[in-house]
Amino acid sequence: MTTVVPTSEEDPSLAVVRFTAELSWADAGPEVAEGQVNRLCLEAQECMIQNRWLDLASLMLTSADVIFSKASEKDLECAYTVICNLVNKPESLDQVHEMAELIATKVTQQPNDKPVLRLKMPSTWQLAEKVTEYVVPSFKKMDNFLREWNLGVKDQRDLFLTVANILKDSKSSAKDSFNFLVKYLETFSGGDALTVAEAKEEAVHAVIEFVKAPDMFQGDLLDMPAIAQLEKDAKYALVYQLLKIFLTQRLDAYLDFHSSNSNFLESYGLVHEDCVAKMRLISLVDLGNSGSGQIPYSLIKDTLQIEENEVEPWVVKAITAKLIDCRIDQINQVVLVSRSTERVFGLHEWESLRSKLVTWRGNIANVISTIQANKITEDGTQAVQGVTIR
Image (cartoon, rainbow, N blue to C red; front, side):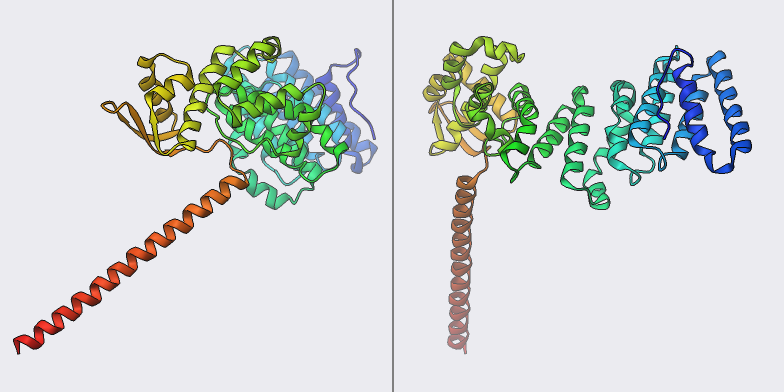
């Protein structure tokens, strides 16, 4: 099969038009095919000369769509690379957005036809700010797509990683990008060591993104095989150690880590002050989980290493972040915690939840029994009073 290879003799866009036209009309016979190919190439040349880039993109997308089921994945990726590069051509921003919407619509309108390829096309997303806004809504239907597509594990990995990469450059989609990256890493659960090792770089990326994120405080990452492998890795052991601090320890552990590994933190773009702020919130949450529900101001002050007049503002920050529900008792200088977020939710947390549910169930049963007993007593009393009156 012919492969699209841009050369100095022919413009890449024209090469794509010629390739797709030849493949589209291949079954019509050489006489018919030659005329149609020449017609389409001439039309494409006119668009280029007149700077009608949107018309050219539409022409190329229509041709590419026709051969989508016939061409190899390599040829299709190459063709869409050239098509997406047209987004750089228009001088009008409105035309740029119109072209981006056209490309995104064409790529996503038949999701069941080579679905992974449609999302794997890196060139389609290299101008993320211009294209992503038209495609992101379809990611919210990913669970439905997966049920329809019936993908194998490898294709699922490719899909999750591709979506994560598409979203990572958009600040508003950072959390969604992280979630898809975690979905990718979860596909390596139960795999052999060699297979799991393929996800090492992405596992590191997930850890760093978790630590950086100012609004992510919990996650079942430590026991995930793709991430757990980092613990004994000579190059990335510190990455795992850092994650362990942010999920299971307090501010003092982070400060000790920083004093010995400041260059390591800087190499990953981690800002010390931001890490300290996050660890203070995390440490406050940990105090809420480990105590009797009453946290003295003095303990918060010492644990968060802050001044006494900063205690209440930090508690308010934790409330605002929905990490804890509590009441501040200024007279007694304590914080009364009614709920605090679990940083990890493993076996221990499930057992604790089970214990609480059993207790609540018992309490509810006792309340019901008491109500029923009181009702029987009340009914009996009323009956006796009725007999007496007679």
